[in-house]
Image 1 (cartoon, rainbow, N blue to C red):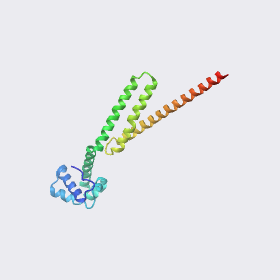
Image 2: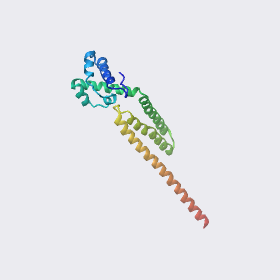
Image 3: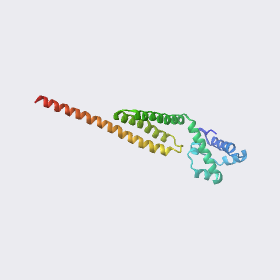
Image 4: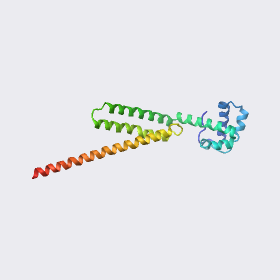
Length: 188
């Protein structure tokens, strides 16, 4: 069942509710129309953001909870079949694959600088996309895990990049001071 577009009015919502009851709950058309008629003025976005308590208040506790779950299923289905939902899934998949390639590169590297760089790159292609996907996909049961783990990986990666930049700066300063000492010794 396709969720009605946001610009639709209350009649579209009533039709949608009636269709859900008939097609997914095997209700008779008369019963479905009677239940759907309880929806008075709200538009599709009001239905989308209604809490379970609102469904219970409008449709009754015996029908409201079932109708709420069915509406949420349709909303999730609409999200996962939308362009944003498909892109979100592919971004997460590609980031995991890219990160795995960098981790494989790190295990096969000979120098510690190559290992450290590969680990930083693995974190940078995994952490931020995981956070992005967690923010975007509000219907996933893994949303909190994506946000939490993505945030940790992003923070650790940012720290690793900061340490690498500081190390380069310190090495540069040491080389400059060694060069000055050699110039002073050479001038004496």
